[in-house]
Amino acid sequence: MGRNYDAVIVGAGPAGSSAAILLAQAGWHIAVVEKHAFPRRKVCGECISASNLPLLHDMGIGEQVLKLAGPPLQKVALMARNERIVADLPALGKGTFKWGVALGREYFDSLLLQRARQCGAEVFQPQAVRAVEGEPGGFQCEVEDMESSESFYLSAPVIIDAHGSWERSLTEEDSHERARGPADLFAFKANFSHTSLEPGVLPVLSFPGGYGGMVMADHGTATLAFCMRRDRLARCRREMPDVKAAEAAFAHVMKHCRGVRDALTGADLCGGWLAVGPLRPGIRLNDSLQPTFRIGNAAGEAHPIIGEGMSMAIQAAWLLAKEIGPFRAACAHGPSQRELRQHFHDKWKQAFAPRIRFAALFAHMAMRPQWFGGILPLLKQHPDWLTQAALWSGKARCAPLEHEFSTRLNDVKAA
Ligand SMILES: Cc1cc2nc3c(=O)[nH]c(=O)nc-3n(C[C@H](O)[C@H](O)[C@H](O)COP(=O)(O)OP(=O)(O)OC[C@H]3O[C@@H](n4cnc5c(N)ncnc54)[C@H](O)[C@@H]3O)c2cc1C
Image (tube, rainbow, N blue to C red):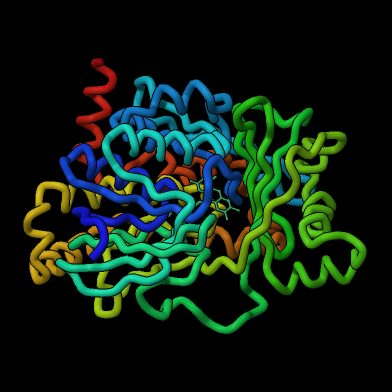
């Protein structure tokens, strides 16, 4: 037998650390296992939507995030071919947290995890959960220390899978696994200094075979993150056989998107390129196969074009804490836990499935600028459609907590 907790959380991304903070605040004895040492950079567009700021404030890191992050994001721009269409981003109410911001994941994830520690969660890092055995009410995790390779065990009645989507699932064959295909997406990210990117504008990029985003984040650096289909990436590599995949992909984006050329020509790359893939956006919940609670990308992933993955991760953690936080004792009882899990996963689908579907539609259009060609003149006349699209993506709404959220927003405004 190993050490005992009320819950073991696998992964300390935005989903895992937020769940750790909220459940520890609700009196749970929590272990968080994270396989990477922090701080670490991560492939991500790094935009934190306004809808998360009241939640981050409640978790106790709102002010630190705003202090470190880049300028408030008040505009969205669509950049396709030589076009640049700018529109207002929707504001969140009228209070302190009207606008989203961007912050490097090396800062954001560290702040969240540090807060989880302060709230009493025990953090195992750099350590990886290698296997989960047992069933609701009595699980055992085998954990490997990444430095010594030694293994030990943690026991808990509840396991929360927050390990993201770019790793293999621990508890079952991921139903999302499938053979390599030309439509698989690979994602790249880099930071640049000395850019001419306008602060406060969030450009969404459309180019053949992919899409992406740019933003001014912390310390005056810009983040460029984009996704490209496997078949298009292979073509780029054939055209530029002597350079690395990320550089060939970047050259393709620069060639097909004037907005990126204008912003980044002459800029300095800071810290090198990061790459990850294949990404397989979609919903991964399957209650008959999965004995654990799932949040963040482990539950489901939206195409990154809407830049809402972290929001969905944080908001899912919030929803989970609301659903199970008061029922620590019931969770120790297998059948009660199964019922709570089914209920939580149903609520998760209600809250996030529409955003995942909307993101897929938008992403498939953006990867085909020839389709956008027909729409661009209309969008130029109606830039407010972009504002509406940002609203649908969830930029100014916290879907799972609509009611409490507005109450909280008012509390925060009054404070
Ligand atoms: C190109 C691109 C751009 C994006 N842009 C944005 C954006 O602008 N805004 C936004 O909100 N979202 C964006 N996203 C999405 C966002 O990055 C993810 O949705 C988000 O990171 C999901 O959070 P998570 O906590 O579920 O998972 P993750 O952030 O992936 O965290 C999972 C953690 O679990 C750890 N882990 C995995 N397996 C184990 C194990 N066995 N044991 C221990 N630890 C483990 C990992 O090391 C990791 O730290 C973007 C994604 C991409 C690809």
